[in-house]
Image (cartoon, rainbow, N blue to C red):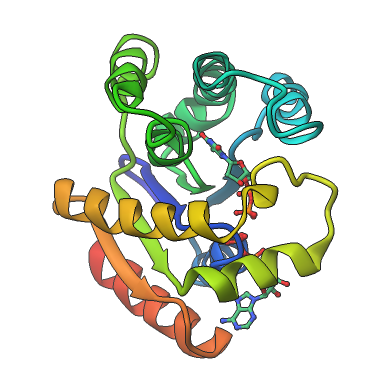
Length: 208
Ligand code: ADP
Ligand code: TYD
């Protein structure tokens, strides 16, 4: 693809099918001849993957919400500098499994006032939103079941349970209403192939 690159993020609660759909979209777009970089947060660059282990493993109260905001933002800054921006500048399509909206939700909703802190640090250190954000919306109990059945050992957030998962779902839908220009919401409760067809149709339409 020539011309400017694009930056697409996938968001949603744990187990909603983001990783599956991000991977399938990448394969589809590559098949159409696009140059695609599939990446994820936390992580996506060697330094940010090191921070991933710090934030996703261990006891749920290992870090305060404030420290977590700093760690996720540090990981994001490294990912942006070393992976995302170089790929966009080279004209590629970057597909990222989670980005700053996840910090707005997972850290920002933990207590009153934290969302403002997330946004301040984002403006200071990141200053960039995806061009398109695909929200995979999903029933929280089913999402949690799917996420726990993977057993990947990165369970700090998954162990917060159903209530948090429900709060996150509502929060993501509110975020989609807050940023209507870049968000599209896809019903993730359907069969994997149906969801993928919907994602492909939406993104292809947006790209053209
Ligand atoms: P996320 O990245 O949002 O946590 P994943 O893509 O890793 O979600 O999916 C979580 C689990 O659910 C995986 O085992 C995946 O194979 C399965 N899964 C994903 N999408 C669907 C779907 N539409 N229906 C049933 N199972 C699904
Ligand atoms: P991820 O690997 O996408 O998990 P899943 O596939 O289960 O959705 O993300 C791991 C966890 O990290 C997830 O529970 C959400 C959390 N997270 C935050 O709390 N803040 C953030 O900024 C990001 C990017 C992720």
